[in-house]
View (cartoon, rainbow, N blue to C red):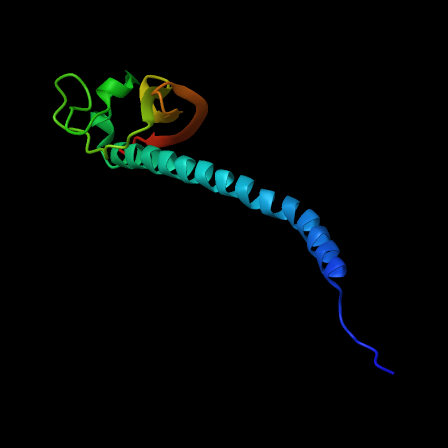
Length: 145
C-alpha cells in the first residue's frame, strides 16, 4: 500500500486564508497603537514645556514673581518676566505648542502668603491652530519670608 502523508494544496490555501482572516484585526491594532504613542509623545513634550516654565518661576525669589496673565507672545526665550523685570525667561523653543501663564496672589489678611501658578500648554495642529488638546499644570509658591 502506497499511502502518502501530507497536505494538499487546497488544504494549505484554506489554512492561509483562515490565518489571514484571524491576523487582520491584530495587525490593525498595531496601527492604532502607534497613533496612541505619537499622541503620548506630543503630550509628554507639552508636559515638559510646562514643567520648564513652572520650575523657572518656582526658583525665582517670591517678591520677583510677577502677577498677571501672560500670553504665548510674552513667554519667549530671553524676554523679561514682566515689564521692567530684572529677570528673563529661559525657555526652549518647541514648535507646535502655545504657552499661557496665569499668576495670582493668595492673601491671608493683608499679607501675600502664596502665588498660584497655572501654566497651560495648548497643542497646535499642523496648520498652527489649537487642536483642542491642552496640558495644564498648577502649583503654589509660598512666601517664606
